[in-house]
Amino acid sequence: MALERELLNKLLQVAAPCAISDIRVDEQRRRVDVWIGVRTPRSWFGGNGGAADAIREAEWRHVNLGGYHCYIHARLPAGTELAEQPWLGDDKLGFTRAKAKQIFALMSEGVSYEGICMLLDVPFNDLWKFKFALDSGSATPGLQGKPARPRGQGAAERALAAAPSRAPAAPETAVPDATDPVWQELVEGRLPVDIRVLSLQLLLTRMRSQFATIHDKDVRLLKLRDLHRYVIRNERVLDYELSQLRRH
Image (cartoon, rainbow, N blue to C red; front, side):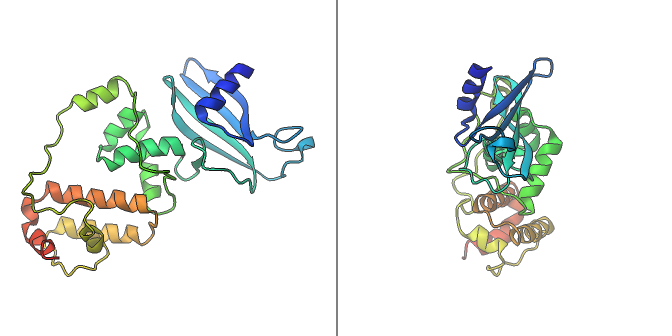
């Protein structure tokens, strides 16, 4: 067991003052549960060790370990200050930072929710809760640096990669680049653009409501990319609106 804990400490990147207190492996369900807490000089989380009385408990889905679903159970004294460790998570998202980074990377690339569920073996309901928390501004993905697309997902990823992909926009497209500040200006209502297409009106209305509560720059960028992909897909019917964008 000591060897297993040492190995998992390295795999999960658990750093002091935290350490693994327990590990349970369910071979039938292909699931591993890991309990992590703050180690005090004489005990775990209280008692003779002198840890804080109030204990914060949380459970997050982590990245898979060797084909096993991994769940982190954290028991941390209230007020514990920890570095941005990948096994930590946001209670409202239900995933660790490492898992959230995988999901967010695929969302940023425009992968469908069904595709994300297949690649990362995530229930659709959990993914929908993740998206709702981001859209409402009640949680952030807690990213460090540029999101990296997950690797080594096996047959599911290879199948998705082999599927026909949408052709890239033609070089002469009238749609500004996804990084053009015009998109944020459009969402924030700072451009005098007459919008005639109802679906774009509804999309912008929803995005403006979301931007009022979303302050995380990565989540905002994700939403702007969604808007850009929508315009690319509907470029023909948005000719009137795009002609106005080109003047700004």
